[in-house]
Image 1 (tube, helix red, strand yellow):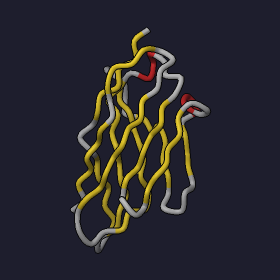
Image 2: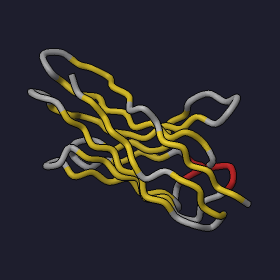
Image 3: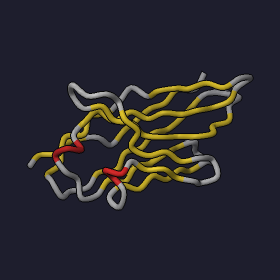
Length: 118
């Protein structure tokens, strides 16, 4: 089974930047899509950005032009560069990996808090 470990969350003022990282570890797996989701209090979890093994990306409209997702396939790590942060970006951010190891799996990280103060 794949384990995902996130890092990089924290408290930042509006207009600031943060970089999230998520590293996957385990044995005998191939990761297809990696992504970041977020969940604010009282709201449903939503997709922020995703990236395929080939580098194709998908972003939520609310973060386009401000967030950039990237990945290092050799390190099985995905990054989320967040710029021009807004208070409405405040949420717990979860890493996600869709991987194959005999069959397809869908794995979540433990989440990291991002708080943007106004």
